[in-house]
Length: 76
Image (tube, rainbow, N blue to C red):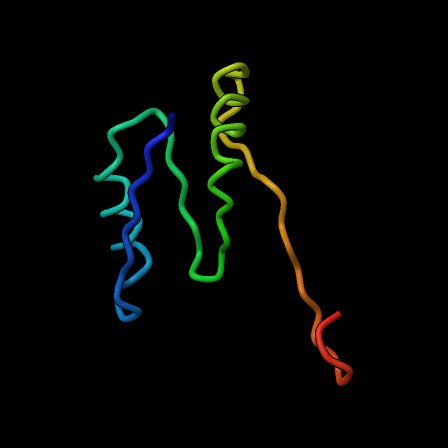
């Protein structure tokens, strides 16, 4: 099974400080950076890691993205 670590930062923290700290915490072959509005589906992470293991010529893998469009009628 895959283990996870989660780090949350104060909104005043500069992005590059977050990146530096995040990279310094990685103790595995894989890591993920998520923006403040990302939704991570943990059950899919194992599939992504397995893909990367089977395809060493790849350096990144993305899952699905959700996008919302707001209008006068609401969210579409």
